[in-house]
Picture 1 (cartoon, rainbow, N blue to C red):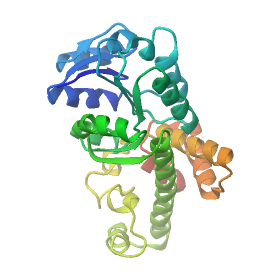
Picture 2: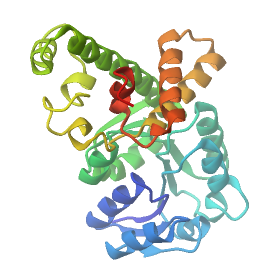
Picture 3: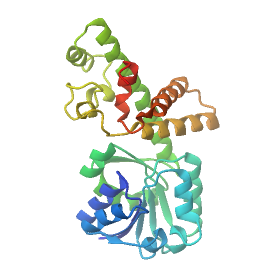
Picture 4: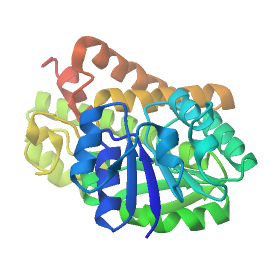
Length: 296
């Protein structure tokens, strides 16, 4: 079993760290929120006083942080991970950040004698708790090979997307598609309501016809058809509006930098931005149907 440092114990990171503990790994944790640290400690982890301290004896360091600036700081600031971690250790960043920062930090890690991959996730809190996340991994073949046994503990589907930054590229492309398809699915149900078409009938038909998509069949945005969807829990996340908006903005930044044309991605970002600005950033992103229907 490996000595693992886990930095960032939020809604996703906390359950991921606990799954590593349950698999028998020696896990040392750090987070700025003391209650999150204590939750992990109650499950068998060991607390550290800083990210650098957590990494100082680790064979593997896993980070799950809010944004690129946090990733850059926790890895490259004086006394942080890359200063403290032993040479030859493996760094896995599962944050969702911009491609440029991911590539930069991996480059610095390699210069300092560490292996590193960017490995953002898909699946939400339930998948983090259940150890069934999807990981999209960017990095060298050797780094991916070393990371995969660790990722297998926390996830069900592990994809090597390509070189450094490719995991982030895959994540923002996937989530841009998800944000667009959810809005389309919500619009279809909103129109069905106006036309007097029963929601279950629309679900039964479209789920087996050309309109079928994950936003419909696995995460249906209206109560009833899919028992596990947040629509049946008053749109409690799940995957919050503000998290979707973050990913859509990352996609738009990447589109501008690369010269890609993404008009639907831009429109999706604008719609979710309005929903968030009206005070609903904490709802599940499928709750966008409530705005389209004029309910909130």
